[in-house]
Image 1: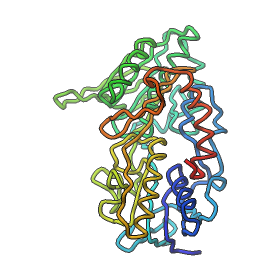
Image 2: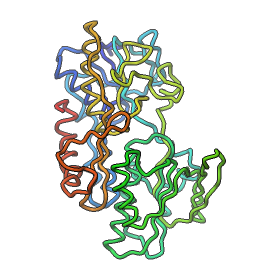
Image 3: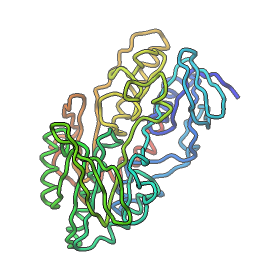
Image 4: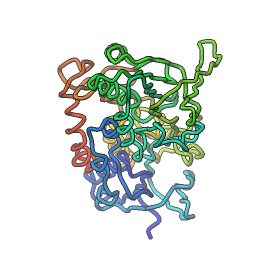
Length: 397
């Protein structure tokens, strides 16, 4: 087994695979290894539609071996620690691998355990989450069993999350489902954040949906526990003066988005900033201290939305800068902070929010994307999944 590689990539998800593919398209002679312990690869953006009953979970899953770029070495091990001064990574198996350049694309960690009682009741008793492959189909079961008078509670944590709009997307589908089926259910959104969306243009349109679906909003409240026997969800709220106040919401149906963070092996490493994320220059994606380390995707501390669309714009920047680094040239490529949030507004309609650093709106199409459109829903349901499997993972966009 070769233990030294010119480029070592940590993570075989969207970020790791697409960067490897783009690097090889630029230079087939590069020696690239990808450290990824998992057997399966997932297209997670479709899990909202799975939860809404309009997408097959099986179509979001591929074998990792089938998406691994040709001419790369697959190291099927878990990272235990980094030794960047020695250009070295140690695995849980006790093996060490060295590199000339390291790319960290380790994704984000779901902290289910931080909500007391959640791991024990998830996937039953009306408690579900589209953030886990095993439970997104159960969300649809929960939809189908909604009755008049039921409370359907949707939560979002105050931590950064993968796809910040996902906690709301499934809620709007629930509202539309109840409206179409004449179910008089009470829908409530409890969020650790302070606003419905950070950009006013899109927030104004989302508030119209909230009104249309008669959704009750509660901000600055983090779900802290689940009392499954009594169907109660306690949350802690933070007032402007910093004081906290508990709330107890009864639910027959509860969709939970867990608190999230960088993976433990990243948080404990010399690569992390004070909050545990990989510390990179937000424009070049080069590590602030270790110049032969680059990072992209959800694991970084770049102040952008943690979405697949962000990765699509980060990947070519990282590739150009890494190739320049190998040639001892200046890093000229810069990431704009672009992110996209396809906000499902109901069945057959979608708001396509696109924005960069400082919440600068960066829309693609020649019309107002804040308005719900069936064309944008078609893009999410049919076009983007095809592009992911056939273009993005192959380094072609």
